Image (cartoon, rainbow, N blue to C red; front, side, top):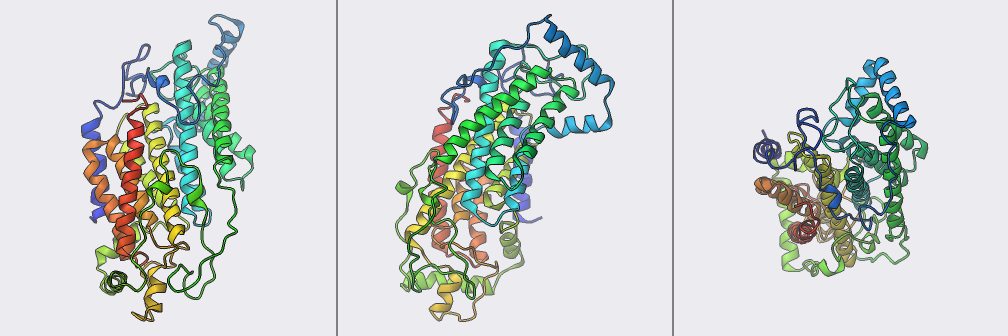
Length: 481
């Protein structure tokens, strides 16, 4: 078993043992833990601070049908009718959209959509952040209204899946579906918006067919989630990401150039100017890298050559494991998968799962912006170009190919990974050392891959740590602790 596999196994096992008792929140008013799948209520989640909404009650949710009214009776009749017509497909759909952890289908879809795009780490981390914030704000708002109306889930009907421990109106599953689907439609317009709407509606319908929600629960949830998404998209349209680079690309061997023999342009030179969630990217910009051709630069360049020529089987495996090249969810997606693997053995409330991904992806989004601010402040050359141009090794070829099409200093991988490890270490403190070890390994993988100098990794790691710490400071004030 390699180092990465051991670390991830340790995270999953130890987190499950150490945190399951305290991670679930308060007790339920109307459901036993067994009836809600072992996940306790989260009665105070509606008080948590939101990211884009000004408050949890910014978007108004009308009251559900009154008990005993004609509308309420019609909803009960629908549930009974649907229960009598259930098929294996209905049951499969219920599990697909409602099994723990709740956010997984949408996180996975985001990862898949990133994998289908050309490699663009800061754009990917921006998107992960927007989707996660939309889901989080939607669930916090849903929980606020749940405890305003305190509507019990349906009773007297056999259900496919457990009903939640919290009140059923509005349904948080539908709210998440409405929020995630609409933001994904904005981020990935290659697929028709109607197709995303259909996914959200299928997720909502599955709750009614499963017997755990009334029709008005999911309709209110969908409407709320979509309204939250609209607010998040409005922020996204004003974050500067649609600006086009019209500047001059620096020339000379001491500046970035594409892989030898290619003419690829630089990826997202203006990403460092995009609006962040927490940090000031320019304020975190480190000093310059070692001067081109200086003794320190030559030492680091020779190290890349020596490491590449003498790679061990374990170093190659580490480089491959953290490669995160085009056709994958990229480095931020890799850390989303680690988060999924971490929470899977637990029984966190839906709200706590949403908070985990919001904090993680806000940190990753800010890490991408901050790393790109530094990259295009200095336009430093990649090892393959510098090593060849300086005559250290005219035929040098890195283990990882092709070299990413953006400047070397600082390492995006290192920045992303250290920021993520800080956030996950805060959320799951018994595993902080394991997350840090993962991040350190991710940083070193770029040296093993021959595509970064040591100072790229070390400086990026330090910057990412500061980003993660600032996001954690923000988290400590969100009311969830």
